[in-house]
Length: 419
Ligand SMILES: [Zn+2]
Image (cartoon, rainbow, N blue to C red):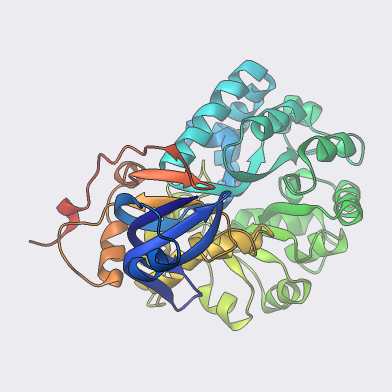
């Protein structure tokens, strides 16, 4: 049993959080047993506390990240489709090499922990071995899927891809139902028969599904050309049986009202990737419609289109991008979308994503800053900085109450504060 003492900021919902300037966080067997004002907690649990100098937040959840693109993140191009061909597919082909995959997986998870990300949903390359390697090397709570791409891609990637439904069973068994996601890369890479086979397998096995939907205008047009019988892009996945409450759809930038209603009706989640959308100039996520149609969404980096795996950076871009279009995003919502909403999207809403009693004690320690100010002002300062600075801002990361990364802590908050 460990009693931590520090300031603490805990998400509650889209509009609110709980801030405790002097909190006690009691952890037993990796799970939060009590949280509250330190004086109150220590009264019931009179343990010598472990004092942490900073502010505790729940660890971040990144619900859409391509771990096999981590080494080439931030290589921009003008549009999604040429960027994939020029930068991404040649890189992913390298993951046929298991030694390279093992080395890169270790780097990826170490970088995520240093940045405060403790859980997420990742896309692997088409090679089943690379997905197994990522699963074995994972640090934190991850759902991983090998991208299935059986058409319209370089021959080596198509050859490496699992042909649905063959071979899916051994992979889902190896990774386990809670850690494996059926992952068609997107409709352009899978003919209707293959999409239907993937949908049927996911439903039969009760597996999560992750894919991309309506990221760029050119992609939407190409889908309309290849699937002339479909009502729209969303209908392609719906017809294949891929849409349901365990489905997390990346981007969803160019949707009609019918498509929004369909996503709501199926109970799907959206992975909103603001930094990626800026980087590829894909468009702005229609936050007003997501709110109006009440389609749930969580934040994600979409590395490697997103330039950084830092969820602080993703939250920064989330707020700035929408506020530039005069759509308000409060700090409370940014924290919620990067933590508890992500855990819910992953099906972990009852066991992770916040520091309420009964949940896994996954947390990140952030610097307090130099002056007394409101939690909102502190949080806004926390999100200031370049991707490099934000990746290095955390002072440490804990999973199930055990410190797993010292963070670099080299980038203090002080320079961001007005004098
Ligand atoms: Zn993506």
